[in-house]
Image (cartoon, rainbow, N blue to C red; front, side):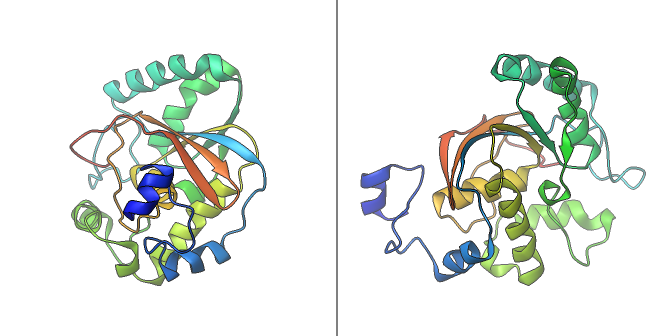
Length: 221
């Protein structure tokens, strides 16, 4: 982000169409995304610790014992904010994380495949882990049309939300939203920890970062 924008709006976003940190590609992306005119708080919860990391025996793992404990702790922290709408990735580790809050609020999360894990076109499942480690160091503009389309789908899902919602999703999908708020084309803007909660406010075509979730080092799954 340029120094002028940091001085004007802080590190959590740039809304100046004349700012050089707004690339032509970002502008084109916005024309492709339908968005809501409503303002909504989005609680983006990364799934809890997974039981495996894309092992050949299980490419869609659920939660480990640690992950289930993390999910219960996050549900307890969010409980008094709702009941709110719940939205989840279809993958087991996200659905299992959502289940803890579903039980407290006696609600069922809506499943939306658009907020699932990043697609890996042409990559065999057993090689996905290595691919993801490499791709997180890159920029969206380097990855080609299929992944730009996936990124647009994530933004379509999140910018279209019209009510306060807890969203159970994944490392890269959360980074899509945060990167959009920051005007940052990097795949990784920050490293949300398992079961961390990042709070964004949807504002039409934009997000405003209210609070970033806790960060961690280590694996992404």
